[in-house]
Image (cartoon, rainbow, N blue to C red; front, side, top):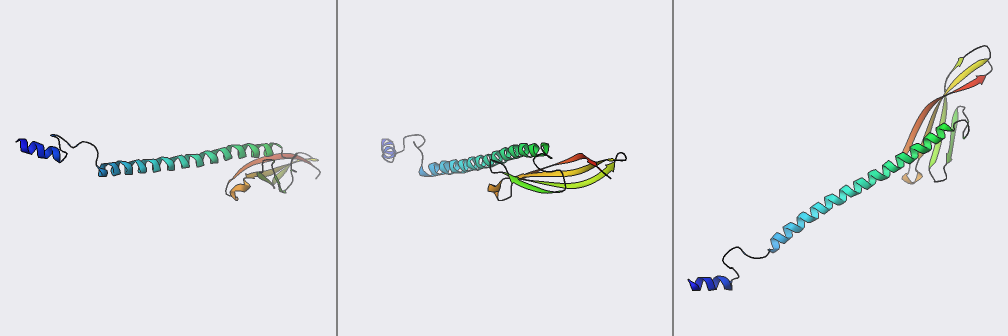
Length: 143
């Protein structure tokens, strides 16, 4: 009996389970860690992309609202296209189309104009843009 205990001790076995981790257990744990980290990094990258898109949409919408509010001052309210660039590099384009007119009296008439303002980021090669539209009603004199 003492002989079997001595031979077990020489082989590194001590009564119960083997102490420490095997190389295989370490590799499995490492592989699981790599998979989890890859998933986390992918989720982080997607979140960052979404954050950039949300920031662009928020800022571009504010710029487009500003241009719509200044219709008739920053660009003429008559059918045609006007384009320019903001100080921050974003580009804007206003397209004004006639929508119809109504006679209010002998010498009074109002004209409705459809205004589309598009704000785009030139760094995105035209893939990111915001378009807002408004119907503007302006007085028009004459027959």
